[in-house]
Length: 195
Image (cartoon, rainbow, N blue to C red):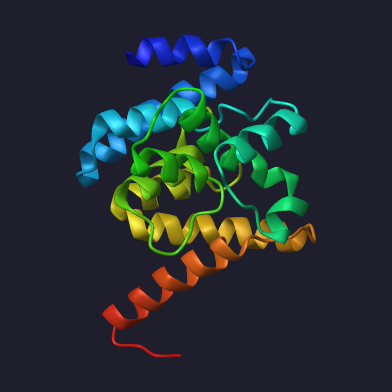
């Protein structure tokens, strides 16, 4: 299938505004992939598909997750806001026949990040933060950081997520903490600091 075929599938699954966002994420993902040396075709595909189930009823999301053989943690079962990333990965696998583990991982962890992120994981995580229609407070800073360093941008994105969720007193995925700590420790070691 071509990227246009996937766009048509997404057009049937989401409202126009979310489709526009998905196209913008795909475009930004290609730009970041080109800049940092990731596979551009995989980045574009993961970008188009990353929110495939964002508007899907929870029952259907759980069915996709089960069909893909994904076991949810207790926190994931409780935190329905995390489901669309997990069920989106499941949808790509069971409905679209995508088997590339890099693409599936990039979709699954695009909201939380994680420790041991691949280059493609980082590209999609940041493309979702910096796509053209994003206008939250701090987006310009995030775009500048993303152009300077993908790792710094991931750290910035995870910091933003942790602070936002903590301020709202909402559960925070352990994957986000682990990804944040991994990059923060790497940066500290590179600068010769230990805390």
